[in-house]
Length: 182
Image (cartoon, rainbow, N blue to C red; front, top):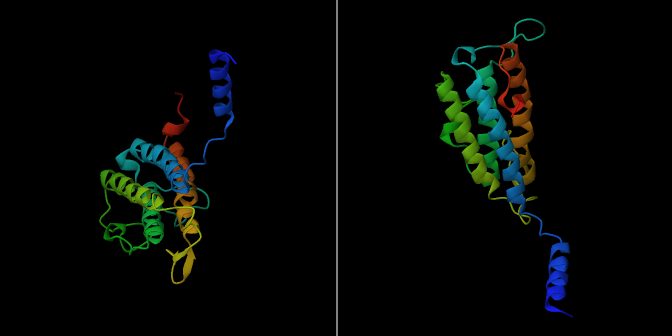
């Protein structure tokens, strides 16, 4: 076989080989990065004076404000990440599900979200094929839960509150950055 044909055949065979699947920690980290790319810019886009906005018309009595939507999502990221890491909740998390009581300003809340996501990235890096189903302390009361269950909460729960925050932003004339033309 001529060297050129041999090189083409070898390249074709190598290209046809399936790529190795990415490590599970990387998969979860990429999902958390999606939260980071969408939720942080949304929080940054909402004017500081609107962080205390909560809808009033309709069935919205007692709902979280925009700022509380953001800080609640961040507090849960902290809690489930601590579970994945098998650590105690970090003091930065605060005492309740909306984060520390001292979160008052837009800057405080956005920083809190960014810090929670950074801690979440640390947790996602710990995930492996071997430890995914290990039982870890649940972030929600007593008992244990599979590590993968706690890791997945950081993503689906954050997107739940992201969706609510999007509605609040749109009610205030803010088009979410993720929805803007590129």
